[in-house]
Each structure stands twice: as structure tokens, then as C-alpha cells.
Image 1 (tube, rainbow, N blue to C red):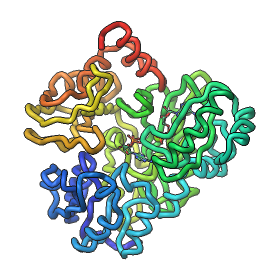
Image 2 (spheres, rainbow, N blue to C red):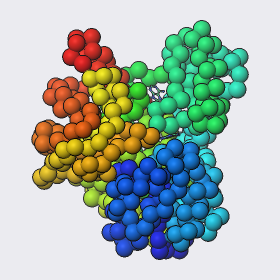
Image 3 (tube, helix red, strand yellow):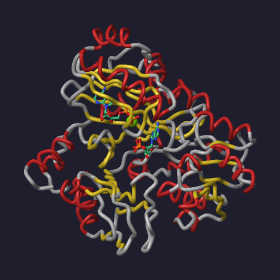
Image 4 (cartoon, rainbow, N blue to C red):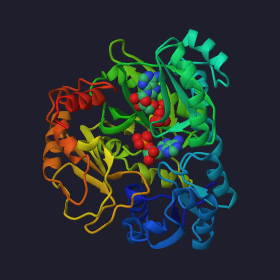
Length: 457
Ligand code: ADP
Ligand code: ADP
Ligand code: MG
């Protein structure tokens, strides 16, 4: 698995493909962009040293097509694959196939992906490492009777979660036994069709929790954390606005949370970048592990800004066999960073998808401003994929300065040709509750519902 990377295949698209190519270039590694036909004119295709077309637009024929990617690997002579996020990034069979083809998979071992990518199994692993989990069923449930029996112990309201779920999908709420009886078989069927795995489990629903996650890095022997991110502002269980560090943790709570994450990472002999997600109850100070993402995350830049560590470069170095070369005491928390996701969705029309052709495009500038995006003027956003257009990221000496920079950044951004969530961020940044960090995972949806009722949007 070790040996240095002499050419990297980027098995992804959009902003993350651009991000990976940038990191590889900084390390002097030549890159190959694996692109669908719909992405032949993408920014990643323009930036990479080579392009391999892997199939038609449809993701199942291109970015999810293992054989096509292995073909591109062979044809290009690349000896490593970076999977980005989404698509095949948490697919253990893909990681295995890459290694069997004699190449390096930039990420943890297939075994670790298999174990932590299965949420029920990840819960068991966390518990074994002494990390608290949300109260729930001991494991997967295969029939309604055992679900009803487990629910008596877990308590209502609860969530039915797909073991293989991700991206905010595969989660259903049940308020009582009758609703569980109705939703349980649906959840099983949906999990089977969406993820090819019908396994589900139950977890107590924690209504007023914050989503706080810890970024970790490991080289198989040593593991460190890069502090936490707060990602409570979500719509349909998908993050929209993220910040680092969490504005509500004391230094002592931060240490507790982050060291629990390192404990689990260390126990896994983890190699690469990963994220442990938790729910945090700020009325009691308790935190509960919910899942681990064994890949780079969309919101990784805010952790880079507060630590000065380039996570994607670190992933490439580790995959190339270099030791971490970082001690925990080397990693300092510097200031505060925020990330705003710009999606091609219209907030005024219930977030209806709005892909289109980029007309005017002006990104914000200035101290502490970073934009991660694959857009350029004249680029037609294809309708087939994730709606993420760009991430506006800001850094300040403290949260107040970061918020002020965020307000300037959204004011100085121009994107025409399609509706986007830029307008939503402008309004969010004017809210006193955002300034005061007075929110939980349900806050954004409640705010959106109130605005709809009030005729604002
Ligand atoms: P992050 O956890 O990095 O914030 P998201 O949850 O927004 O990332 O997911 C990033 C991308 O990966 C999204 O396009 C999402 O739909 C996709 N994704 C994540 N997990 C899965 C999964 N298990 N199955 C399908 N798509 C997934
Ligand atoms: P995914 O793999 O789709 O990211 P997660 O398990 O991370 O799924 O959950 C996504 C989001 O759903 C969380 O960020 C949180 O807002 C909400 N959520 C998950 N589990 C619970 C729970 N037990 N109680 C309340 N909300 C939850
Ligand atoms: Mg999650």
C-alpha cells in the first residue's frame, strides 16, 4: 500500500476535484481527471495534466462505475486514486479493487471503510473504544417485531436510520409505535433501493442537539485531531453553513470531545483524514457519537484555516507512505472560520434545483477570504449531479471578525445565470440568533418555515 505517488487519478468532479488537483500540484504530483462526458469542459478537466473520459453523464455509468475508473487508472498509468467525497469515496469494494490493481487508494484501508461506513457497526466500534453513542438499538433490525421491542427500550421519538445511509438520506422519524410500524418497512425498502443494503437501526431522536464533528488525521500508527466544526445549520439533514471551532464549547469540553475522537481513531489504526460526527446537548454538556466519515469532507477548509494544515496534501503524503510528522501539541487553534455553501437551488422556490449557465461571476477578495469552486463564466452547470457550486470560506482572529468578513464576502459576490443559496446566506448573516450562536440542528428549518408563513419566501 505504501510507495510514493507518481501520478494521481482524481475520481470525482466539481469543486472537490479542483481542490485535489491543487493539492497534488503543490506536491509536484501529476494529475489525471476522470470525467464523465458531461464534464469534459469542467474546470478539473482544464486544470489536470490529463483527462480520461469514463462514461456518459449518468453517475452510475461514470463516477460510480468501478470498472470504468479502473480502466482510466490503467490507461493513464496513474498509481494512486483520490476519491473525494460522495460517489465511491466510502465504497470499500472500490478501495479494495484499486489496491488489487496495484495502486494506492488515498484513504483508509478497505477494512476500515467497511467497518465505519456501516453506521450500526461504527456505533459498536465507538462503544468498544469508550466513546458514548446516542441511545439506540444494539444493532441492525430485520423485522418489525424486533423493531417494536427495541423501541420500548430506546424510547420515542426515534429515528430509523439506514446503516449504509449518507448525505442526509436514509433517515426517518417515528413519534410513536404506530408510526414506527408504518415507517419501518418503508425505511428498509428505501435503504435497499438507495444504498443496495436494506439494514436499518433505531436511534433516539435528540431534538435540540448541535451537530459538532471532529476532524482527525492518522498515519496508521499515530492519530491527531484538528479540533472541531459546528455544522448545526442544516436543511433536510444537509449542512448549509459551518464554522470552526464550535462557538459553545469550553476549552475543557473541547479537550474531552476531541480526545474521544483521537481515542477511536487510534483504536482503528486509522490512515488518512476522517471525521467523527457527534450530537452535543448544550443543556447537559453531553455528547454522543453518531457516525464516522472515512473521507475528506465538504467543510474541511474551515479546519485548514484555523490550524494552517492542508488536509488534502496531508492525505496524499500519508497515502504515499510518509509518517504524519505532527504531534498534537504542534496543532494550534487560531481564530475562527466560517463556510457558506452556495448550491444551485432557489431559496425563494423551496430550494428547487436551478442549474444554469454562469453569466456574471465575481468572487469576493481580501484578507481571510477563500473560495473553493469549479465555476467559470460561461460554464453550464450540468443538471445530473450534486448542486454544490462553491464554498465561500472566511477566517478571522475571532468569530466576530469572521462574521464581519463573511458579510462583506457575500455582499461582494456576484453570480448570475442561476438562482443560488447566496441570497439565503445574506439573510442568515443578518440574524441576531446566528450572531449569538443560538441554534441547534432544527433551527434553520424552523426559521425557513416561519419566513414562508410570513410570506418572506
Ligand atoms: P459532508 O459530510 O462532507 O458535509 P455531505 O453529507 O454533504 O458531506 O455529503 C457530501 C456528498 O456526498 C453529497 O453529495 C452527498 O449526497 C454524498 N454522500 C455522502 N454519503 C453518501 C452515501 N452514503 N451515499 C450516497 N451519497 C452520499
Ligand atoms: P448522514 O450519514 O446522512 O450524514 P447522520 O447520521 O450524520 O447522517 O445524520 C445527519 C443529520 O441528521 C445530523 O447532522 C443531525 O442533524 C440529524 N441527526 C442524526 N441523528 C440524530 C439523532 N439521533 N437525533 C437528532 N438528530 C439526528
Ligand atoms: Mg453525517
